[in-house]
Image (cartoon, rainbow, N blue to C red; front, side):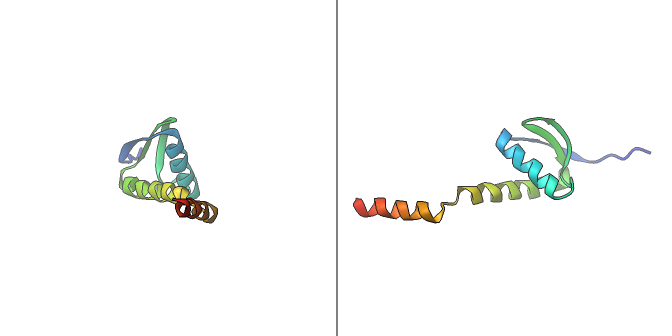
Length: 80
Protein backbone atom coordinates (compact mmCIF):
# COMPACT_ATOMS: atom_id res chain seq x y z
CA UNK A 1 0.00 0.00 0.00
CA UNK A 2 1.43 3.45 -0.92
CA UNK A 3 2.28 5.89 1.84
CA UNK A 4 1.82 9.63 1.61
CA UNK A 5 4.26 12.11 3.07
CA UNK A 6 3.12 15.62 3.85
CA UNK A 7 5.48 18.09 2.19
CA UNK A 8 6.17 21.76 1.65
CA UNK A 9 7.63 23.44 -1.41
CA UNK A 10 10.97 25.08 -0.62
CA UNK A 11 12.32 27.71 -3.01
CA UNK A 12 15.66 29.47 -2.62
CA UNK A 13 18.68 30.53 -4.63
CA UNK A 14 21.15 27.84 -5.83
CA UNK A 15 23.79 28.46 -3.11
CA UNK A 16 21.20 28.07 -0.37
CA UNK A 17 19.81 24.97 -2.11
CA UNK A 18 23.33 23.51 -2.05
CA UNK A 19 23.32 24.03 1.73
CA UNK A 20 19.93 22.30 2.01
CA UNK A 21 21.26 19.34 -0.01
CA UNK A 22 24.36 19.17 2.19
CA UNK A 23 22.25 19.21 5.37
CA UNK A 24 19.96 16.53 3.93
CA UNK A 25 22.88 14.31 2.90
CA UNK A 26 24.58 14.65 6.30
CA UNK A 27 21.32 13.56 7.97
CA UNK A 28 20.62 10.46 5.85
CA UNK A 29 18.06 12.17 3.58
CA UNK A 30 15.85 13.23 6.47
CA UNK A 31 14.58 16.45 4.84
CA UNK A 32 14.18 16.38 1.05
CA UNK A 33 11.38 14.32 -0.46
CA UNK A 34 11.99 15.33 -4.10
CA UNK A 35 14.31 17.75 -5.88
CA UNK A 36 12.50 19.66 -8.61
CA UNK A 37 15.21 21.97 -9.98
CA UNK A 38 18.23 24.02 -8.82
CA UNK A 39 16.00 26.38 -6.83
CA UNK A 40 13.05 24.21 -5.77
CA UNK A 41 12.51 21.03 -3.80
CA UNK A 42 9.80 19.31 -1.82
CA UNK A 43 10.73 18.84 1.83
CA UNK A 44 9.03 17.14 4.75
CA UNK A 45 6.57 19.63 6.17
CA UNK A 46 7.57 19.05 9.79
CA UNK A 47 11.24 19.81 8.95
CA UNK A 48 10.82 23.24 7.29
CA UNK A 49 11.67 25.35 10.34
CA UNK A 50 14.63 23.13 11.19
CA UNK A 51 16.00 23.47 7.64
CA UNK A 52 15.60 27.26 7.77
CA UNK A 53 17.43 27.43 11.09
CA UNK A 54 20.28 25.21 9.87
CA UNK A 55 20.72 27.17 6.63
CA UNK A 56 20.68 30.46 8.57
CA UNK A 57 23.33 29.08 10.94
CA UNK A 58 25.55 28.02 8.01
CA UNK A 59 25.12 31.42 6.32
CA UNK A 60 25.85 33.34 9.52
CA UNK A 61 28.88 31.15 10.19
CA UNK A 62 30.18 31.75 6.66
CA UNK A 63 29.79 35.52 7.08
CA UNK A 64 31.81 35.73 10.32
CA UNK A 65 35.01 37.67 9.85
CA UNK A 66 38.25 35.78 10.31
CA UNK A 67 40.91 36.93 12.78
CA UNK A 68 43.00 38.48 9.99
CA UNK A 69 40.05 40.46 8.68
CA UNK A 70 39.28 41.77 12.16
CA UNK A 71 42.85 42.98 12.58
CA UNK A 72 42.77 44.69 9.17
CA UNK A 73 39.55 46.49 10.06
CA UNK A 74 41.10 47.62 13.37
CA UNK A 75 44.04 49.10 11.48
CA UNK A 76 41.68 50.97 9.18
CA UNK A 77 39.75 52.40 12.11
CA UNK A 78 42.98 53.68 13.73
CA UNK A 79 43.73 55.74 10.65
CA UNK A 80 40.46 57.64 10.80
